[in-house]
Image 1 (spheres, rainbow, N blue to C red):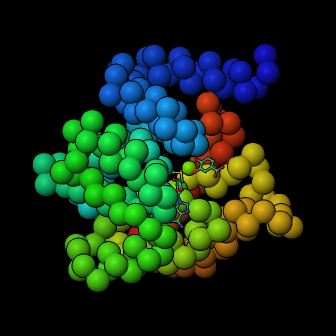
Image 2 (cartoon, helix red, strand yellow):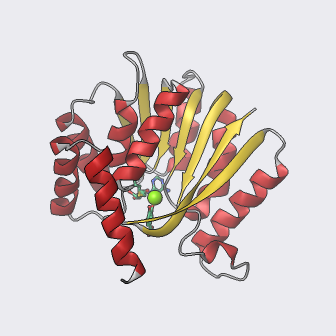
Length: 222
Ligand code: SAH
Ligand code: DHB
Ligand code: MG
């Protein structure tokens, strides 16, 4: 069987066994489709991984860079204790509007704040607000800016914070040092920063599944 087909079937098998049927999250994905926003949300099993990591961490102050339709934001919000909050940053007004609707539909409008604009501007604005430091940061926006997002993450995170970045493999393109794809170069620079920063301990996992061949980097701030 072609690799992608078996990856899809195995993902469906895991979803069937491990993720209870969830009409809310399924409806969110169909709303996104109806609204015509790109289908690049994390997959259900990846969303559940984010949820479990946030739970293990006991995360209360979560920052997400790259909201899209709010699918991953909802997974993260579900892991929060009573008092927690997710701040999620999105460039596109149209995506943010869909996300706000979805987040309201899922019942998390008091736990998730969608902030519209270029994330680098929103991050400065967040810093000015003097919020408590973040204990989990999910970086999943424009990959060329990943090095800047890591710098901000280090500024806004507390000691022990978990920093996760999506799409660091891209079909293996990450190892192409000559790549002219700015997204690949953004990820590579991000990896170099991790290599050279003694404040962070990291690992990366390659993944296959309904989103093809990709992966996550996970770091903990000392
Ligand atoms: N985390 C989402 C997927 C995010 S897709 C999920 O798994 O459900 C990446 C998103 O980042 C897109 O919605 C895109 O519009 C947004 N984005 C791109 N450049 C950005 C920027 N400079 N600032 C903030 N968001 C940006
Ligand atoms: C793309 C972005 C993502 O965040 C993702 O998970 C998959 C694809 C993209 O820009 O192509
Ligand atoms: Mg992604």
